[in-house]
Length: 347
Image (cartoon, rainbow, N blue to C red; front, side, top):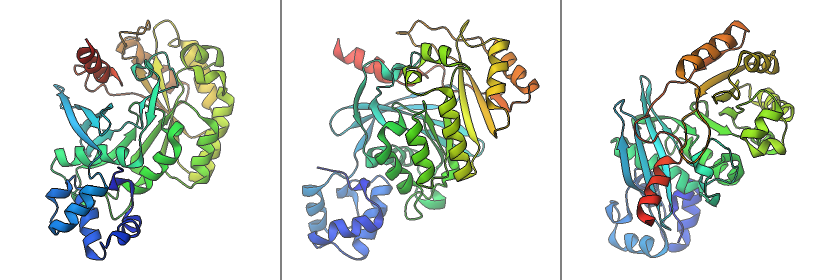
C-alpha cells in the first residue's frame, strides 16, 4: 500500500473521491496527515478510518532511535514501512530549526569520504517518505503547519544523491512548499548534489528557486576523480556551466561545498585554483573539515588549518566560511548512525 503523504491536497481530493470521501473531510485528512497523525487518531467518522486503513498507509516513516548531542543537535534514525532505515539531523539555530533529510536508502555515487555509499543504493525514497521526515520531526518538536511549524529550513543533504531521485525530490519540493502544507519557502531549502549536470539544468528548467549546493571538494578534475567517481563522467567545467545556467534561470547564488582532506586538497595552491575557477560568478564556498569515516582511509584537515584555508580564499576575493560543526559526538557523518545500527543488529 502507498502513503497518502505522496499527494497534494488537490490530488488527495481526486484520489479519495472514488471511495466516497469528499468535501471538507478530505481537508481534515490532509491536515491530519501533515501533522503526523495515524488514521485512527484523526477526528473523522469510524467508517472513513476503516476505508483509509484498508487501502493506504498514513505515516510512511517513524522514529526508531535518536541521539542528542551536547550542542542540542538531534540525529534521528527513521524506520520505513519496508523496514529499511535512513537518517536525519535536526539542528537548532537562532532563526529556528533546520532539518537535514535523506532522499535515498544508501547511495550509488561512491564518494570516498561518505559512509552512505558503503553498501550502494538500496532504493529511492518516495516523495511521501521524504516529506514524512519533515512531518515526524515537526511533530517531535510540537509544531503544526504553516506559521505554527517548528521546522523553518530544510537541507537535502542526508543519505542519497537528490538529483539521482529527481522526480520524487521535485514532488517533495512542491509538497513541502505548498501553502496547504508546511509552506516552507524554496529560498529556505538547500539541495546538495555531487554534480549531475543534466539534472541541474532540469532543476533550472522546472523553475525551482531553491539554494543549489554543489559538492565540489577539489579544484582540479584529477584530484576530484580521486575522491568522487562522478568526476569521471562530468568535469568541473561542465558542472560550472550548469551552475551558471541555474543562476541565470533562478537568480539564486550557488553554494560550493569543499571538504578538506589532509594532504590532498588543503594547500594554498588549492585555494588559489578554487578562487580562479569561481571568479566572476556569484558563489559562496562552505569549507568543511572532513568528518572521518572509520571504513575510509581519509583524514580530515584540522579546524585550525581549515580556518587558514578560508582566510586564503577570502584574501583572494572569494566569499567563504568555515562551516559550524554540530553533532560531532553523535556519529555526525552522514550514514554513520545507520551503519552502526545495522552492524549491531546483524551480529
